[in-house]
Image (cartoon, rainbow, N blue to C red; front, side, top):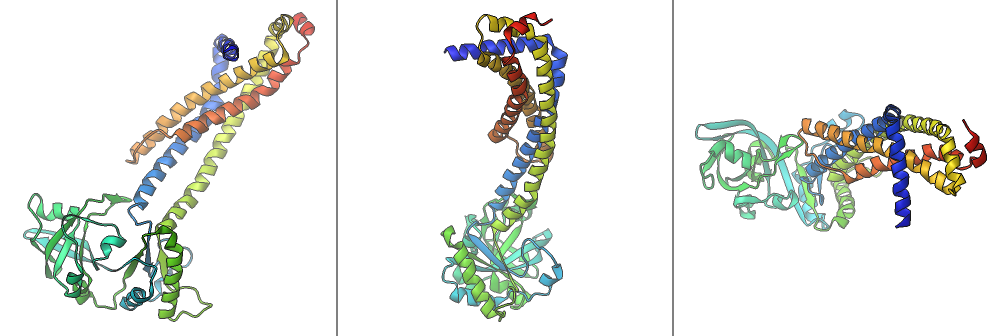
Length: 408
């Protein structure tokens, strides 16, 4: 209790000193305020973007890999990838037969068609030709009705499962199950309606139709390029799965031992790593800019504290004469320095939080309080206060009380 009362007394003395020199105190805290505001604004904004991006990535199965012609992140010569052979039914059959680690595997042929029901028609709707295992590899579930079945796939039944947005567009408030829609020139019966999934980086994930793969291959051909999704129940098996896929694909496509892969194995982590590689340097730049402002603010605090020590030399002498020790004087001026920095830091945290959330709101992203950003703001300001105030406090603490009492 005694220690808290002493600290409380030092804080009262610090705020009395700050009130006595209001303009000087405001100018002193300005550098800290600008530095912390800069850091917190950008930190809050990037954290909000990061939450949004990882929410979007969660729409891609973390335990699923996709074998495709193109990598999701293209580095270097695009034409190197453009000239690759398509991934086809032959590779799907080989992976189905030999990829023993995979728990689910689904070929996916993508095309775009006009989808029509009575007088409602929408152009360039994505049609996915696949199998019943798409539900497990891509984590989709029908909200109403059912998904396509193995029998549908084997017999090429003209049935489809539609996204929630397609249902809203074509049927409005009318029941969709059992109705027939026209996809291109063929008619399909609606067997199910998928759960609403929202957007992925601004693109609707409910604006597509799923059909048995054979029904779409009849119009696109079996040699059309596809992607193959493979999923495992245990994420720890992902690396082993990728090694197995690579070996099978290289053998089927007759890739020589010293040649690089002529296919891509894509997964969620690639997008996350790319995002981190972009935001990492941004964080560094922000901290450098904010650090410079904090350095300037720290120098300002040190100068003002040195002036304060000079102005209060007689006060220090009186305190020492009545029994104050060096550590008491040191603590007094250190707490005063930290108080100055903390005021600037606290105001900077508030301003940075408001500006950061204003930017997130403008980008239509969710806003919130980041505990880590608050801790960073207070941590920076407190550290600057201690470092900037230590020398003036030490100088005050070692003053000779007799010389201090005679100082004018």
